[in-house]
Length: 248
Image 1 (cartoon, one colour):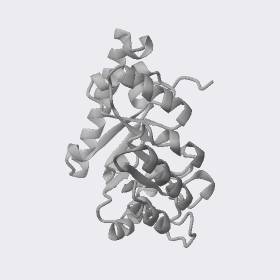
Image 2 (tube, rainbow, N blue to C red):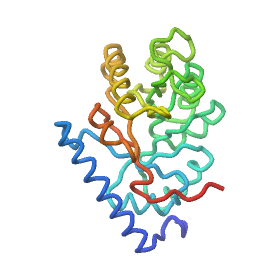
Image 3 (spheres, rainbow, N blue to C red):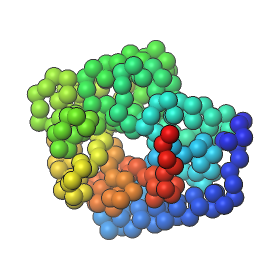
Image 4 (cartoon, rainbow, N blue to C red):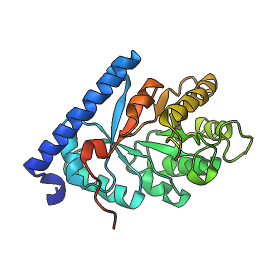
């Protein structure tokens, strides 16, 4: 057990508890407005750049799911948190390079950012070699079809980046389990427009993969709109943990 993971200042624990209460109230209100059961929505605490102590404190407050987006930071943090005796469900939510797959599969329970057949193939090979159970995968969707920003392309015949081929590659992989879709509202788009488009893509996707029911969409600023359009997972950072520390 390391000091940084085991020791959380009382004032910081209170800050996290207050942030959690506010976010929980927002999610509950959004579910009520949408006519949905609160249990249908999982909050993922996005802990990138925050210390392992915050993860331990959040787990103590009942948060079960944590999100990270850089392997170098996430791998070390997951090990530190595990050394403190805490085992959250880790979601890798950032763009993933194929050469990082072997590291990510050792701590992540879910990878939310698969957007190419080549990445799915690399992740399958890494998971088969390192895990005794399938790795859950969400296919990241490009809502605005800007391939440079990541995401599989809906309605595209591209054999590597098209949403259909990517989903099929994940579904057919022995060491992966296709769980659903993930998306980020594109820059310059109103969240309402973005998540309405995502809901259309999801309908198409569910017709082909009815068992893959997860939809990860919405962050601190737009989680209510995402829930209104069917999000099952929302990724919350600053609204829960406060202003993000400066990256070095």
